[in-house]
Length: 476
Ligand SMILES: Nc1ncnc2c1ncn2[C@@H]1O[C@H](COP(=O)(O)OP(=O)(O)OP(=O)(O)O)[C@@H](O)[C@H]1O
Ligand SMILES: [Mg+2]
Image (tube, rainbow, N blue to C red; front, top):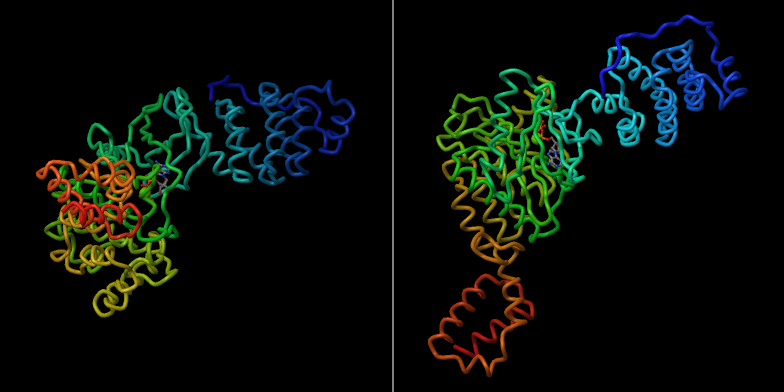
């Protein structure tokens, strides 16, 4: 958007009714004065749009004179995007107000926003109202305003890469505090494959933004993991992220839930560090953070953060994986909704209901029997009611590394590939048995013990695993 003159519309000439204007435009189309061309183009969207256009664009309107071609193009795009009459009329008014305030709307960008948000003036306005950091163009509103940020899908102009642009809504000290927390996810702070990389940017006005790779696969409460393989990877990746956050950085994320988890290729990635802070800042008196859906029982019971506040993240990871498998969060019924934060009464009632469930219906709600092993045992220790009994990220990750090895598609640190992949490769490329038998005894023993270790991780019976088992038998 560019700054324009300070003149405003002057209505000096004769006023025509919409019908007269239509007649005029229909007669002389092609050689019309600027305002008439726009009015003609807008009139094709309906009577209300025409009326608004006549009011704002006729009689030598500066708006029409300066934006003539652009407005004609915009009218075409509105038609292309199937905008209805009343929303088209609203949009012209919004554009006019913007122009009157001294900013010339950038119609080539508007084209994208109009097509991305049919009949949604609020979203188009949200795109118009943001001045992005240099080198970034806004494509569309990605989510309605979250609790802390407004998120846009945007493009990094240099490489045409899609990114998300997050505008922190709070200003002043409150905004700076959130930015400090978001900076934890800057790759100079944490560089981990299961933690979103967040870059900070400012625009020409010094307003704060964060920029991230765009992930198409953000989870939701309705995302289901297809079978144990996927659940195992989701659990392991989140534990891996938490192990890094908790043990290397002493940070509590504080807001783990499906919509704060995305997927890039095969990796689940934790995002939204707006609440994340050092564990020392979570005291028993701190106000509980995060969604009720994944909130740990000790926080719902108002006991406060445990001595070891990392345990609230562990519960949240357990609850997220539980929901991905069973379609409900552990303390919730199937399809049960959480009242909005501003609905104080319903919210207080729901919290009381959850307290009752924790105190007297725990076994009815936190049921694990429908979850298959080995995930069940891991979720059991992640979803312990007492945080003292709940396992740490380090311990859980170590256990998961062994018990989930058969499902993990990606190698964990230090390994190039997963155990099933390793077995497949060996089965394919190892020389035949007669050649292997020629190996020196010591080398053969080492190989057998390596195969045995591999076999202990492989519970799925497939041809690769059979070959490993056979080789152990033949060579031992
Ligand atoms: N990198 C990304 N790629 C794709 N979508 C994203 C990305 N980051 C955020 N989103 C989407 O935007 C939503 C809000 O982003 P984020 O969680 O950072 O903001 P928030 O205001 O803190 O949200 P909340 O409502 O959880 O407090 C996410 O739940 C997700 O749907
Ligand atoms: Mg979020």
